[in-house]
Length: 340
Ligand SMILES: Nc1ncnc2c1ncn2[C@@H]1O[C@H](COP(=O)(O)OP(=O)(O)OP(=O)(O)O)[C@@H](O)[C@H]1O
Ligand SMILES: [Mg+2]
Image (cartoon, rainbow, N blue to C red; front, side, top):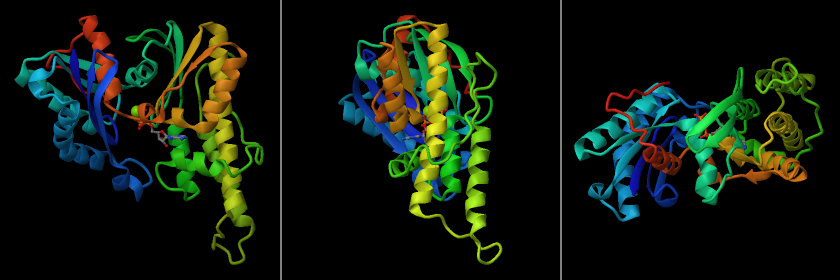
């Protein structure tokens, strides 16, 4: 069974062909990083226009790469929520048009559930259900209790900034470029995670929610103090040294990672399952992988950490998950909407 997947929820245009849910025949991703670089974040209107330009050429390439034509497809899958509304609309409209023209079933996919599916796509047989799923991305930080590929119960989520958003904003403040996550991950290797003790927000006892806005502000104040303290001429900022930048990045990253690990362990105490699946762009973070893997190993819990290319936005996770929705006959009508 061949499913074509389309993903346009944020700033990656992606089309994939996946066979029987697990075999990736093609997975093309066109990233818009360069377009958003000078703004230090995704500009919705630019993202949506870029999807419009690249979607059809990528669709052609994905079909060629998979060695199939439109006639060989069995279903069309598309991310319809959550995401930037203009960006989602491009993918949803294209998917509806294809499904209608080819008389194929249309399957609507929740982007966060697709991020969780990355583990299944990576490991094939896994994860063993029920499991915990931690989605850490540019727009979300959410913990789920997953009962099967298509069923995820939300246990907690961020009350303000997502982890990835905090990475991007701190990187912008430090002049490290966009996207900030990989930049901070890289420079943090040269710094000390214990250099600055930034606050860890755990919220009220027992809460599985997250909050990263206070941490972001703490980094800003620390940065301003460092820069301000050595101004020879008022209002003339003196750039930080590479060592100072590395220490700041490593200490910030450590605070984010500590909260993510602690909350996952708390969720495990409440829901004693055998495995934890990671998904979303921040799941590529080397320190998170290292600390979470160590904590899980000590507790004999199986970590499911997909490779970075499956963690960030891509359409293979969309087409793969769609197969399991297809088996449950959970199709969408042509009236299905994009939901921001
Ligand atoms: N190594 C890394 N360390 C930390 N963060 C990272 C790393 N690599 C990528 N990121 C972050 O991941 C985010 C992008 O992930 P993803 O593509 O899943 O998010 P999104 O699709 O924009 O948001 P959502 O999935 O919530 O809609 C960015 O914020 C980026 O900085
Ligand atoms: Mg995403």
